[in-house]
Image (cartoon, rainbow, N blue to C red; front, side, top):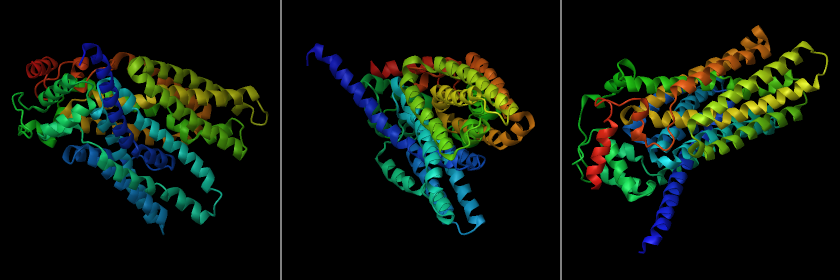
Length: 485
């Protein structure tokens, strides 16, 4: 082969690897459609805590791929119970089961996608879970309107039970997905990991380097090179030790990573996004829009705007970087929330008089808010959290982040009505604007750029990971060079 042909071959290899990872991420992220649909149905966020922590354990036990199947199973059973419920207790049981599925879906889709994606496209691919969540939310808006025209005894059953259908499709398609190469190495299955890495890496050299890095992170000696090797049975591999490394006595590096995760997950929901999305019809009614068709149009416009902008963010994540999008996102959200709060305050002070400019400001500010949220803070939370944790605590670390996210979401959504009654609906959004201002400061000071870094290189950004948690980066590079020379 002529040397002039090599760049073309390399480019074809890169496109092939990204396309393969793209298909895998689409399949894994399909669970997020059901997740978004169920969240719109008002499912209690606290149920998902059980699912998120269980998913962390399950994904380390049976693998990332089959954990997606478990998530689909919970969604299927929950939707079926709700749709066929003959009494209130069965309906609540269905909500509980579906809520556990929400926790599973929130945790496993981004982690799996991050672990099968090449570094150059990881942000783009991991953000697809947020894309599908928004598609699910939009479907929830539309179905709520469409099924409301049916007889009452049928409308709510169909609306709740329809989530069972995509769950079956997801469970079947998952069997065509590869397992995460990181999980395979953790189990000593090097031959299987090589096959997957050869498909998702952009060059054979990169595949070999990634395998060396992952082996070092899993504590496998670099000279161990069989198809299946023994993984050192070290104390740190025990579940209680993983909790100790992550929560009880973390290293300074892990502590910084955990702080970044909890702050990011907290501020995503404390921004008031659930209040804007879930209560947007009430916000628009407060702004003077009372016609049912107009309410549907403006509410669906929120869903469409979020979905389109998240797709744009997916394209920009690996080109612009995480930090610029995050800072732009939070800054724009502050301005949008101030505009929305101002418009609602003016409308509230003139309850019997139409104020067209204030109504227009409310609608424009709402669309601007969801746009700025979707360009950064929305998709970035899953992307960033899934890529910064060390290998052995990644699943549990992401589960802890999801738990923080769901608790905050539950508190915000359940207190919004009481808060708006106490300080007015406009005052509520002024409060959210203050919280998002604090988030901008946090993002600027605590979140380093991760674009283009491999998962095994993240320790450099937060400090060197010690031997008890993950091999340091210098050792990983040394082992990789010995394997490839």
